[in-house]
Image 1 (cartoon, each protein chain N blue to C red):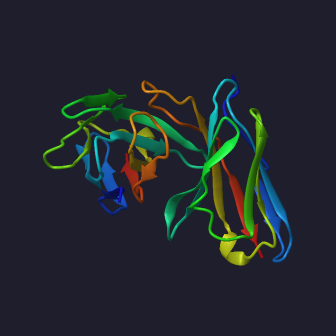
Image 2 (cartoon, helix red, strand yellow; image 1 turned 180 degrees about the vertical axis):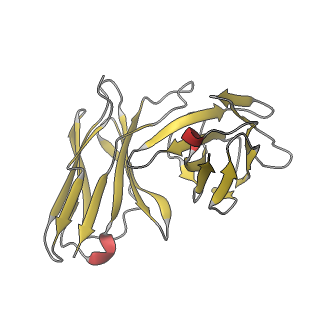
Image 3 (cartoon, each protein chain N blue to C red; image 1 turned 120 degrees about the vertical axis):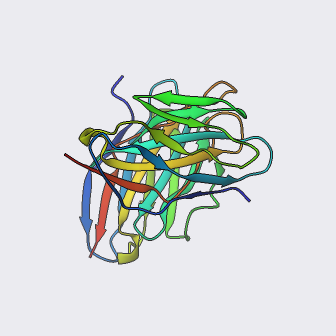
Amino acid sequence: DAGVIQSPRHEVTEMGQEVTLRCKPISGHNSLFWYRQTMMRGLELLIYFNNNVPIDDSGMPEDRFSAKMPNASFSTLKIQPSEPRDSAVYFCASTWPGLMNTEAFFGQGTRLTVV
Amino acid sequence: GNSVTQMEGPVTLSEEAFLTINCTYTATGYPSLFWYVQYPGEGLQLLLKATKADDKGSNKGFEATYRKETTSFHLEKGSVQVSDSAVYFCALSPLQGAQKLVFGQGTRLTINP
């Protein structure tokens, strides 16, 4: 398996533009997580899905952020409109839920720069 | 609430030195505990884990013991290598398993030859 695949790896956009980040989880995993990493705040969980259903979006910073998971193999995180303070590395992770599962698999991240 | 506190970095050591990175946690119930490592330009990878009190996780020469009495999960390695240079994250999951991980702030480790 190729692991969790995120695209793009790098994104530079102008303030006010819409940005869409994409994630393909590992096949068979049915939990998916979006994290944001910044120097100031570290790693923050934004939202997670079980079986394509959003379970907890309490970490989504504001209404400009939205996430979808239309099927088991694809998820998007959208920021509209983007602002410079959204600049960060965004990670997607997937895992198989269950009592014995103890590992989340992370993608390589998307480095977003909003200028 | 659930939280994880790690020793602040950066940490710089010479090759073959002994490493300790402290981690303490606050959680209700019986969380699972993890150490993840992030190499430059990459995502996080699981380094080791422990799911109940007194469990010892180990991998690649690293060890950490789940201490419920001190709510700690300190990472140790007896002899570090240059290739161990990375950022290390302590994390907990409030449920058994890897759901909704709560991460510490990370500790940057640099090993000099």
